[in-house]
Image (cartoon, rainbow, N blue to C red; front, side, top):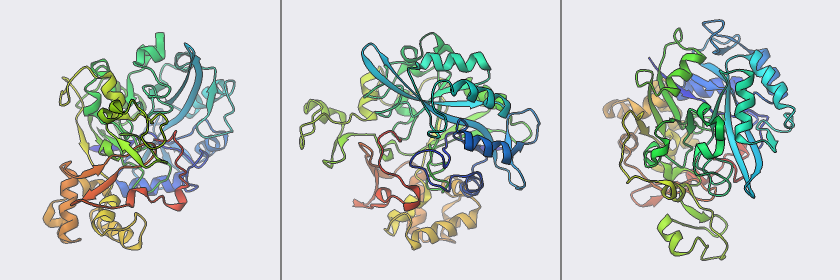
Length: 432
């Protein structure tokens, strides 16, 4: 059984997040997308943790560390997850790093929150900030509390708040996490990088690559836009089995990841959003990393940063690497074909029609044959769905907080740049 898992989400208690990010809406979004496992997001926030305690219950196995929503008949399950930020000075430079934390039970989360509350104000935001706390100290206090707590560097390449970020990151996981780096077994690729890009850096071969949405809203064009595919049924699924499969990169259990085209990510190219300027790394070098419009330093994107650390040519595939599939969300495809904005009436109706006909968006994107698609929608959209499946669509690269733009036959669609009002996205640079 293929189980699709999105293990990095936020709740309504995080900044710039939809107020629809509650457990009920997450469940609905997951079912439409075709996801079977979700991170809860934000378990450090006292109000959200109280909601998790009130609304979640153990699923098939009492002590498995997998939860379900009470009073709902749904196959969607949850694991306990949050994102935290550490900020500290290292060798005269300020380091701002985001980390994913996973825990095997609500009791352990409660204990962990008691420890973390001494480091920062957990009530201030769903993604709390711990000042004067190093990456190594965070891992150490988690592992001392319970060895099953997992720490994963979040959106590892984005310029701000990531382990390899151009503005405040490091050149290796070992440098960032020091003597605790042996406890870090995986990292999150983020939307602006792909496994193929990461395979160019040999030092990353020993780490598993996770792909998650980091979603701020529960709708299928956001939730699960990046996710992980595992071979688990509900009886065999447990917290320990899940992370055993991830950390060992077990190809029998960890089947593949689903990635957007990294050009779609908000930090793929270098550039300046306010100046409407972007460029690839070679052009940045020619410009000495200065914006030709305002003359200030460019925001150095993920592609450039990967090239700085790469010791392999593009196309190299390490032995034992978990494969991946490249997909854009269905609603992006529909918006490009018509063309219109993501939330126009026509785009929403056409997307819903396909999802209703074939049960889930991931099924439409990955599996439904062309002839079956054309029984529900027009041939042009069906062809675009197949091109998407084959990774053959062209995306104008995103930069400096701007999403990339899907282009069909040289015609731009602005769907990606239209922010739905209920998401309350404000272009904050820290969000991937």
